[in-house]
Length: 139
Image (cartoon, rainbow, N blue to C red):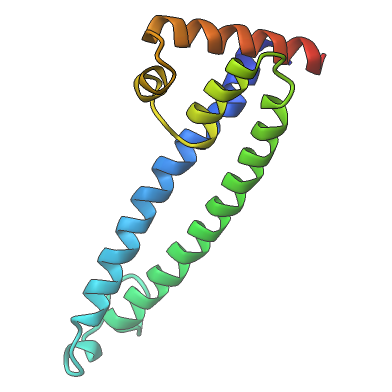
C-alpha cells in the first residue's frame, strides 16, 4: 500500500459520514410524512407497489433506508477501527494527533491547524509525511 492508498482508505470515513447525514435527514423526512397520513388517506393507492397504500410505501421506504443506514454505520465502524490501527503506525505523536483529529474526529484541516497552532500548509505536510511513514510500515 502506498501513501496515496493510505490516504484514500482513511478518507473513506468522510464520505460515509456525509452519506449517513443525508440518510438521517431522509429518514426524518420520511417519518414526518408517514406520521401525517390520515386513516382515509392511507387507503389511497400508493404507486410503485401495486395494491399497496401510500402509508405502506412510506413504511417500506423507511425500512429500506434504516437497513441502508445500519449497513453504512457498520462500514464506518470498520473503516474507523482500521484507520486507528494505521494511525498508530505513525512514528511521531504530532502525526498521530493530526491524523486522529482529521480522520477519526472528523475535523476539517483548518480546524486541525487551529487546534495544533500550525498553518494549514504545515498540517498538510504533517499528514503527507505521516501517510508516507504509514505506507512504509505497511509494506
